[in-house]
Amino acid sequence: MAIYDGAGNKIRRNALCPCGSKRKFKHCHGKETAQGLLGSADDVAGFLEKNFYKARANRVAFEEKHGRVNPIISGHFRDWRFVAVGDELHYSKIAETKYFPDFLMNYIGSKLGSEWGMSELEKPIKDRHPALKWHDSLSRFQKNEKPDEDGVYRSSGNGSLVSWYRLAYDLYLLKHNADLQERLLNRIRNRAQFQGARFELFVAASMIVAGFEIAFEDEADSTCKHTEFLATHCSGMRIAVEAKSRHRDGVLEYRAPPRRSGKDQCSRVGVEGLIRKALAKDPDTPYFIFIDLNLPYLDANLDAQPWLQEINETVRKVLRDWLPGKFPANAIFFCNDPTYQSPEIPPEENSFLCYTVEIDTPRHPLADQQIIRHVAQSIMRRNNIPNEFPEQETLT
Image 1 (cartoon, rainbow, N blue to C red):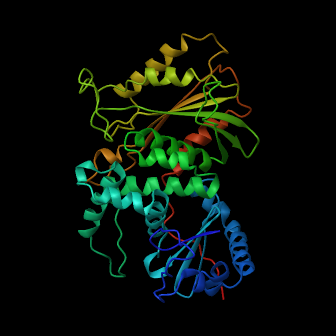
Image 2: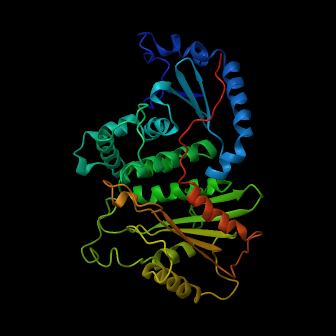
Image 3: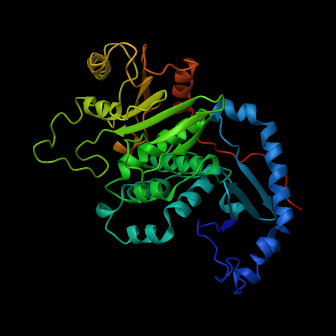
């Protein structure tokens, strides 16, 4: 089991122990699988197992708000908090991780890597990775905030803060419920690939919230066109999933060619090409397509909205190219998260939008058509990042 300190760094056995004893970790708190902190390896396993069963008892209320994801597994010993994420164990001072978002701040650092993060912070702000620009913006925002009487900072945050924590939570969901692949992390660290990888991560997290297990496709297999991943529902339903993100000039580091720069960047949805590329995958199972509109704030009042009219007309146009019962996809989910486009100001309430188009006569019908609406609901639930740690017993 890997063990991480409060800054999100993996503790090496021969490194100095973070407790300040000036002894090597393996001879201090890392002795015999953190025996100095928790007891034996059996104590650790028993402690986590007991906490898991207690968390499961509160699962109904948790699922109603956060979806069908594994519960937060956390406990504390003396002044240390421990959080299990998949096969990893993270720990930090309780005073520094009173709330779950405090943990997420450390967690995202452990996933992106301290070395990568420091290399980005050495750059001028304008040259940094988009996620590190979010971090700079949220840090400046928090410096101007004042705590409540109990010393806790409570704020809805600005666009950068919301974007940063949504990224951190999606990384956590994938690791805690599936397999956070290094390939995806490398794409997230890459400025040129960040937008597409970020949306793929969001889609995977949303499907996990809906109760699906995720299995990423083999990218080394060049014999056919792969979707992003296969999702298997707890009912046994198997669905192929594809994610496509619309690039727009000046958004998330993208720079359009001169001939396209500024051309209808924010007045048109312009996703017909993305839909057709997704349909070219043509899997042999039910198929969900997710499209990232990547537009500024859209009015969710669906009466006569130009963007809505364009989407519906685009889908009708694409459908005309297919005979009834031959269309590859069962549903297309059009998503829009404008938070990072206004990084310095608080986002509009309910600014995140998901508009779903169900296909009446798909090639591979779903055993339960209700699953489409359930996924749409889960996309919105994914935005409900837990704030509190569950009440769990202390290891003694």
